[in-house]
Length: 452
Image (tube, rainbow, N blue to C red; front, side, top):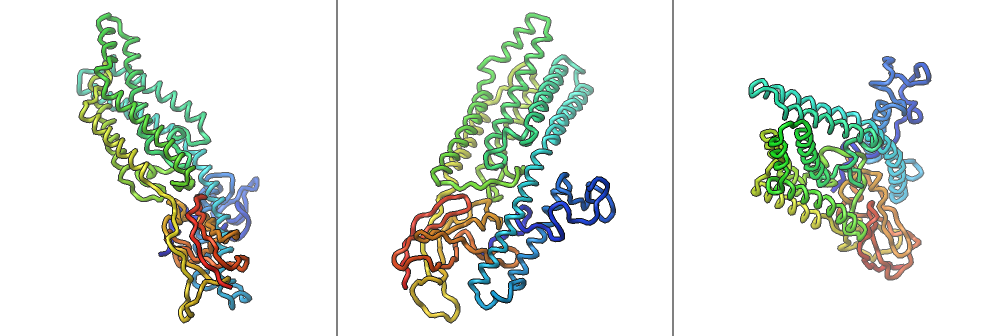
């Protein structure tokens, strides 16, 4: 099974035609590269100091890597001096691709850092866009309802205060994604548990702020007493239960993942940058049932609570216990999924690789061995720069797993099978084999016999 690395986000070689930031032709005034049309920072700009240049450099590097990988997979580009030795040529191809992958991984990392540093403006725009949507909604409902009320004014003021605080926080954390900073995990992915908890926290804070502004503007004693009763625990028990549970799940999940990673029971590979799809998928980009159901159920409950708050702005949203229990079941399912996911990679067997026409024989130095098992390629580590980090320990010798390209991906390594040569430095006799994955997790030790 070939590992597909053709999707966007895989690593590759730097573009040809000059160093980073200089490919793309003549420069404009001040040494700024310009494209053939002379458009400056845009289109084909490749300078390393602007977002367009960083993205263009990475796009060119990725295209060049794919071209080079497919060329080597077809047997082209190998030096004539190495063509007579399959082992030497395979090692040369692997080293070429590994160096190229490392070079482009730097470009990919630079693009991810730049994205985090610029997305904070979009988060601020999204926050103030939500305020505008609230204003339009209040204006429309006021026009077809009982008119503009004090509660509508307090709701708009509460939204303005909340948006101002979020904008200030986004500016303070502008290098880490702005408003997204609290919900980005240590693996540089959006955290499902933190995002759900943040949604409930924002809703509850807005509701309390709304009640506080209504209380500040109320002139009648009975009206103030009525607003204070809106904060009774009996009314908001369901909402507060869901809030406490979602925050607890976020904390427990973070602790659970950290402990399992340190115990080598879970493999985690850092992502290039956060994506919205992270909320619904696992680290490998595949849809995760536990994440999807938790986001869907929580989203429905948040929308229901927001509608209740809009209908009764004088009290905390009284979330029905039936809906609250549904969120509880969803949260527990998500938490159980976090305990169950992952697992340590394992070697099941090691056999001598046999070419067509080759005789059956014991394992000797210089032979290729096939390591069979599972979990060798962690989720999110399908890029060639991560595959090139895989190592096999044979006794005291560390052997880097060679990259074997095929059109559109790699035939070696894969998640279940690794093929590596037995180096001459391995002493004959009983030798223990152990795989070290790109996440730094070690498999079990599997003994083999190496003959003279």
